[in-house]
Length: 272
Image (tube, rainbow, N blue to C red):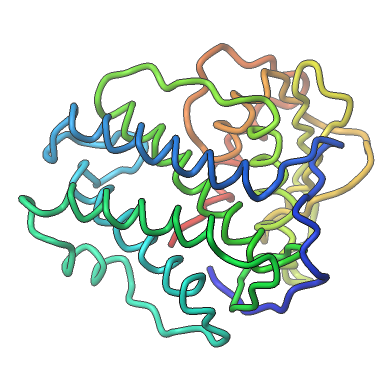
């Protein structure tokens, strides 16, 4: 799921999502906050607790994944690595994880190190990236904040807790990231471009609707407000969770072709 890319412009410190600004310091603060919550939920659940939102995983595998991801991001940020380093697959990552009696401590240390590296990195940091962004520093801070936030939800569900809601601004930014960063990276093959329908994600209290055109080969983000076959209306926090195929806290308002939500869940699978 990775690709290389150069910074599009010098760091502005901000990006736009539905006219809501989120800056690097906020991403780092969110990363620190959600990482602590993830670890607390994991401790409560125990290593053998299944993670319903990550089929086949237990808390042990979730922590092993986070341990690797935080160390992986830290290496690029702290080392200012320009070139992509070959990555192990998920099977190898889980196989080479720290032993059970060291796993939580390793995750705590890796999380703290990444937070520190992002907080201390210069605005002009130049390193490898894999999503479009105004700068490498913003990309890594944004991606790790949302990666950790979603897996925090996974850990809370595994612990039997009701996941804490997200701040609307952060949630809208996460929705923007999956639609206009992840989905924008690939174009469906010409023979798979037939439209399956358009989904509009509409957060209560927000002015802009984020729209995705589903095709047999994937999804295409669209700016503006084209006519949608399905509008999903909910709080920003719930839309964020739905976009990442996590359960929402409240009932969604589905207007139109409701089957398209199942199409989204089938097509949109971000794996690492």
